[in-house]
Length: 342
Ligand SMILES: [Zn+2]
Ligand SMILES: [Zn+2]
Image (cartoon, rainbow, N blue to C red; front, side, top):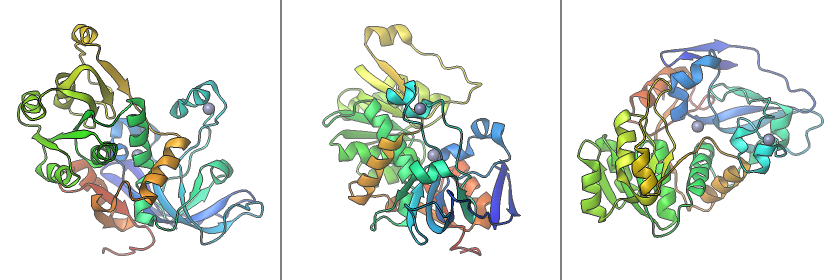
């Protein structure tokens, strides 16, 4: 089978390896759709594990199951989480699933024709796709789950003004979810195409991030934002987040600048204004179940975010599209359906 080994964003090698045969408690799945996540292209984050097979937004079909696997059958349509928390440790018990110290096994990446699903993920990381969720839609389960978690951490409520800085795939999902919750949504980005997407997602106020963002915000919204989601890693975006949050408000660092960047927080100002800064990283099982429900019920429509579908052999192009970010939102790799360039 073909597998894409990622060395860095410009060096991704398609290699032929033997298709694995599942042991008694494992299963083999065929990858139908796998999204390229914004985090896949963050080299400082991924390079320590390179070369690796990336891809954690996976919609797959079960091919063969080991003798002891009773829950799944060949032909089943599934989403598989890349790792599962133990559910028992101190962190899990307190809802900090992404901080679980017991995670030992990860799913091999989805940028491959097949994946061997290890026992623990067969048992607790696999979710049957409801009939009305397509494989392409299933690639949004994991990113939407991360968005669900971040909005829960920030206690997003109906009637609040929610600002999203950075309208890539994650930012647009934040816009959709905040709209679904009945918030007034302000979208900011420097890219015109992304702002058009934000408008299409019914963001109430659209601000070109090249303008004076905090000034525009007050003119258009009448006040600063109750909650600001930072979904971009540029230094200027962080500055804007500081300036756009209202008294008593919350800033959520959904994306962060690189580790070599120093961020200065106006802490005295924030102290007097009781502004909270929180971070949100990854998601947990409850968030995944909620994301599935949101997509299944059509409360969150995701099809309108898909801009590209590519063959596995075109994966470099996919990574270029996502890194560049100017003409793509969601790029999906189709390792089995698109054998040649579509
Ligand atoms: Zn992701
Ligand atoms: Zn745990």
